[in-house]
Image (cartoon, rainbow, N blue to C red):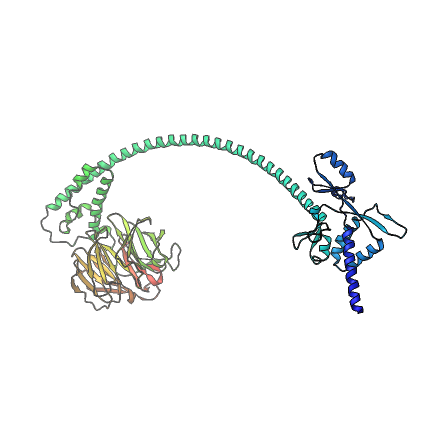
Length: 608
């Protein structure tokens, strides 16, 4: 029973506290609050949505005569100070301290100062209510002057103490004040930004004026310069045209004289009906004669001398080897001007070492001597190195492929270089400029073994290419059109074109075979010297000897004109008279030196 009575008393006490809190809410003048002053309001302006005290109401009437003011209707309730303070203290203590600190000043502000105290220490207070649209929907006698941040709602004090007591709440006046401060900050910031933008705009406009002025000046200067350049070009053009005309006349006279001489020589050739002795006929002589004729033909064509060229073109430039001796004598090329190789293999010196520097090689594979220049195929460095006739480095040019062999196309003075891995031949100028490339067959895939092993050009300007992988010898035109394909029984290592007998000397693994140009085997060279992959065969036109590079036996062999054995030189090693897989050889006719490409010793050795 006692417990039940106690609960009833507590409920009654709680209800009484709520009623007292409802009676304590009195609005303050909004204008006074902005001035940090507390004064009770007597009316509400619907146009401004503000509560006004008695003083500010009079001011507002004079300033805004058309505004609608709604005066608050008063009600009077008498409560004691002790009861109010006691109940308020009990109610607030049951909630969190934060809410108590927020609501206590508002409760104190709502007490009317004009109240009076009677003899029984009773506080009589007049409570004033706001218009209906500012009251709480749940507690219609309470003003919504608190914001709940959790629920995003406007609530009254009863809601704050009951349903929202654990939420984050703030008085609307504080919220307005805070927003006002934020607005002022943003406004000032915008004002500052506006000033900065104005200054920046003014600066950009000034710069734009300067740039436009500079552009105008630059355009004028460019026009002046171009006028000067055009004048100089026109003067230079006239000068060059005059020089070209003068040179053409001189060159035409020179070529006409040369054609006349050649016509006389050709006429002499026609007088010969039979020639029995061909011992003095050499490949180098024929090439010189043919080059001389072709160069004259080319120069005439470039000068557009069509009439002279048509007459010149009537001559037959295919030189019959049986009628060439008289023309050879006219060229006055004497063997006495060429130095013989002594056959003693006396070591003169060497150049090159392993590396990628200017005077270094990485597994060189071939050599070519032409017009006082020596071309070395530097295989694993992917380049061609060039030296002068005294074996001094001149220059080099890099390739985008791995080179295997080289020859000179004297018809147009260009280099033909074979690809080590692919069936492709590249044409380069002597200065290292790529001019063209030719796919030898449709098999463009990378080979397991060496692909293009050697290239030669015969007296008819046909190109001979021997392919290691498919055991074939290809004969092509100078434009790389297939003429004939010769199938070989074994792998081909080297080919020598015997112009005198119109034969091909071909080496395989252990033999030397002689073929006709049609691919018919004539005979196999018999020798007590057992070959092991002979990689290069050359003919010394001065000594009238065959020189063979016997690669896997690490030696050099000499044979006479009838392939009778003369001498063997060298063995495996890295000393002066030793080799490691010598790959190619060449004769320097000006010095009589034999140059050996010592592949695995990465150098070129010189003998006399």
